[in-house]
Image (cartoon, rainbow, N blue to C red; front, side, top):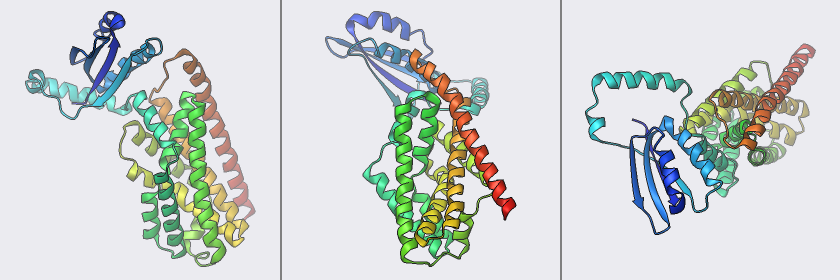
Length: 339
């Protein structure tokens, strides 16, 4: 059973009307208590599938009512007479319904927005993980060690900002889009700086397969990026651990970025061009797949201005990224013909 607890602090003068409205929404349990002389506390237990609709209403109220606060709390276990005595038939029917909903199952927009904002922030912890993963990946490529490169991808937190770019594009949140793009660019620049330094001081590793494979780009790399982006978006929607999916996204971003930096540091600009194309193709493919997944999932803002902005931003982002990928595909094909 997937349920969540909503706590709402309501000023007394608005309590009656808001309380009546809240009770009209589907819920499992409903409690009212006096929080203070000025506010009432409503606790509302609802199925996760019903939470977003309730939060949308509460978000609208929060814009006009002072002293109105809402909290969403995950519930690990919920027991009642009804849940314990459910019939087998009801359980089977509920399971079938859950399986049907699971095709587009996701957390509420409000939870996802908080996660996207968190992923767009640049912190010391994030910076340190990027530095360490860049060093490990560069050493792995120099030593031609696939195991070391994989280890670097495990610790590289590169999935968050890229997925946040797609999420903010869907909602038309340009402020969050800018922060996410800056965080993503920041991580790539760190990787480039470290790998350029390694490429400048040593020419070791410039002839092995781990390096050479990341300086060549083909059309088959586009489906890899799309699959990585789709997996990252689905994990984000369901608030799953990003570690394993993050490895898949890091496959498309970290080693090619290291190869690009090593090529620049060594002065191998032909190889640098191939690595740059690969990095660009992968980033755009990941963003395109994530944008499409978020569109299909039905994520929409509530406020009128945000809805209008999102209706413009959503198709434009898909068209813009698709055009860039098409141009890159043409460049790749022309490069193969020349070779």
